Image (cartoon, rainbow over all chains, first blue to last red; front, top):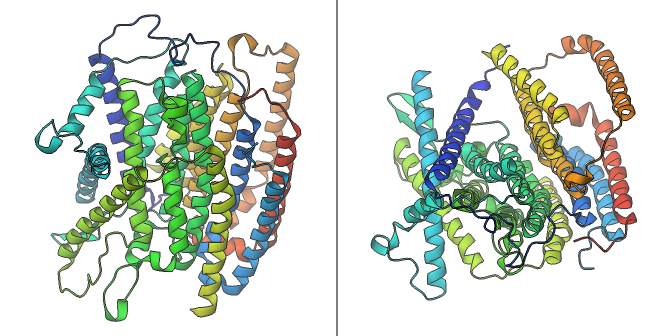
Length: 123
Length: 346
Length: 168
């Protein structure tokens, strides 16, 4: 069960502790050291000097949501390419053809997206 | 084991301090470079040539009043900048800062941790970095912040794909995902071990990677999330004191780490030309190599600033078109051209 | 050492998974879910599946959770418009989750035989994984791309159907 690679994660954990310590200490320090003169207007949200209307819990364009979905899909495809890339030299032409099939299907989807105008931001 | 552990602790502390110092002095350098490019003087009051300016700025950030809007979500409002700072600090763990040092018969590598899939670790940290901005911007409950946060996250995720794709050709030719191995493969000298930097073989991949690095750091010309002419301050409109400082600081740390990753992947990392022909011993080569690495990093930080004061900001549709319609097809084409030419000519 | 780490990670995973369900604010639920994914990545590292661990963080914590966060931000999260769930709905949810649990437990019970026969060294490394993927599991790999293509088409259809102009 003992895993030799675990030792490599020890310094990463160490760095995490350092970073966490730094962030927490600074946050507490700035909270303690800074002046505290609160007023109602100061704690209002900023809206270019005019009175703020409503809040920011408003729906936004569905395009952003679409970008996020497409990002998930493309991200998975890119991840699939890494094991191939590492083994590319041993897979040779065979691997090249395998990846061509995979990527051409990805490109079909990509051009479908472009054709449908899903990524059109100009309008 | 004990010496190994002490060495790692010293290295972690050193990298941590150097990261913060470089980030702090990048703010100073940015102002000086801007001043130089615009024919001004820049900060020159705090200390000789103003070199104490970053310390003064840091102190001022800590001493400022902390303002948390009443309508915001308090916990998430504080969490946002903390995540941004944490991810920025964690990204530098796998970068090889130098070769190996031999002290008292033991060999130490100047790298905090060596993982089999180092590049992917960096990408993982980058992909977590989106949350800092998203959560901070949303928790502020301010319309400008929300717009900035959404823009920033859409931009960062769009360019992450092109970034991932641009590396594939490099990975296919080097056959590894480990940053230290990629560095080692670029070690140069004359005769049998004559190697070029990776940028010679992957110029297009390098260009795409650098563009994506700019977009991931939210640097000009990709600084739409915080473009002051439209969104006041973007996702950090409501932030003050050290929380604002963390956001700004995280940007500079990200810039430092991206410069280090760019130098490692494409520009030879800690290697320098003819390093094996000068007849130096290994420790000397490592020390010079580390200096060379930092010189390369400094150059890329300067490059980031140079671009900032040269190229104007994109419009949002231009930014999205560049990311999706130009960089992704280019990156795919780059993979095919590189791989096919390797198979044909090798 | 490894065993203690395992217990610690499991404790964290279960705790944050419970917090996902019990948090009132959906954004907190997403954050707890991200922590859960991190602890699961930790489990992968303990099993020496390093590539899987990092991919898990990139895809689940870094991509899918961003999508979740978008969806939650897209919803109106004003306090007054918080949906009130009726008891019938809660009851139905419990039954569904219970059935899912039965399915998961049932499917995991059969895997013991498989776990014992896979003893290939270094299976967690990206190199070995790639070798297996492109030699033994080539067809499923290629079919995956068709699946992703279908998902792309579906996403575009969903995103394009709505034409509203009163958003930002």
